[in-house]
Amino acid sequence: MRINILGICGSPRKGNSEFLLKKALNYVSKLNSFDISTELYSFHNKEFKPCIACEYCARNAGKCIHNDDFSELKEKWLSADVILYSIPVYHMSMPGQLKCFVDRLGNSLFSTFKDIFKKEETDTLPKLLKVIGSISQGIHLFSGQEHAITDLINHALLMQCIPVTGDMWESYIGVSGWTGNNGKRSALKESFNEGVFDTCVAVKAAEKMALRAVEISVIIKSGIYQNKTYFTRQTHYLPLLEKISNELH
Ligand SMILES: Cc1cc2nc3c(=O)[nH]c(=O)nc-3n(C[C@H](O)[C@H](O)[C@H](O)COP(=O)(O)O)c2cc1C
Image (cartoon, rainbow, N blue to C red; front, side):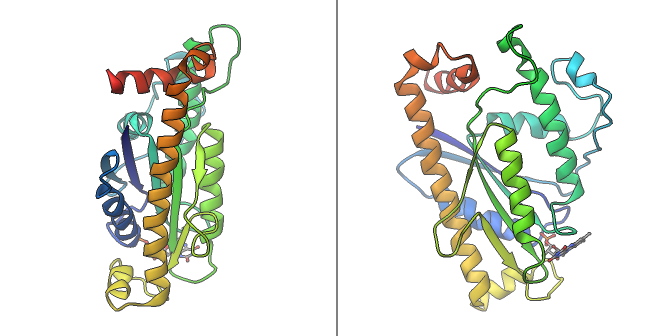
């Protein structure tokens, strides 16, 4: 079973978020049991304008009126089976650039998939069932990591996807870390090399969460495909079923 993993680094710089994300992606790219492909998308030097509620996407099959990096990331997001977000905490939540992306993604997808529902239902999404894991780190301890992860879990649920965590004890709802009051972009890399306990825990949690995300995606994709006679009759599952069929043939 092929599993496409998209790592989305929500920091505008190449730093601590990217360090943890690379650890997670490297860990699962070595799995021999599945056909894994990994890609890291960075918000570094990217532009994501805010949604202006113009409803252009509603009238144009999901295409956004802004001309920036949104459509490229939207396509990558739609092609992925597993999405791992890795973000710095900004003001107790996710960075604004990423919030702009998820706002626009939500509204754009309603129109992208409108045709499959015909006139039966509007403003609904198919069950995309991408497995979504969240990594968040900040400069301080207890300074918004859980809030940021919860925001991404809510995003996963809204997008009809499956939020996933790593293993207890080091991962309750996702992966969280802190740089020990160090503002450098290399803070986590350095503390990991020095064997700092909290950073080693965050790395282990990121690796395990990526592994569990892959496993759950395999379970979901094979389960739907095995039962395709049933799921073909369920409109909500058609895009996922079509994606899996295309990959297999
Ligand atoms: C605008 C802004 C807001 C921030 N807000 C928080 C915060 O609320 N809590 C926190 O722990 N760190 C906060 N930070 C610090 C970053 O989360 C921290 O430096 C992180 O390690 C940066 O990750 P990066 O290297 O991937 O960019 C903030 C940084 C910026 C630039």
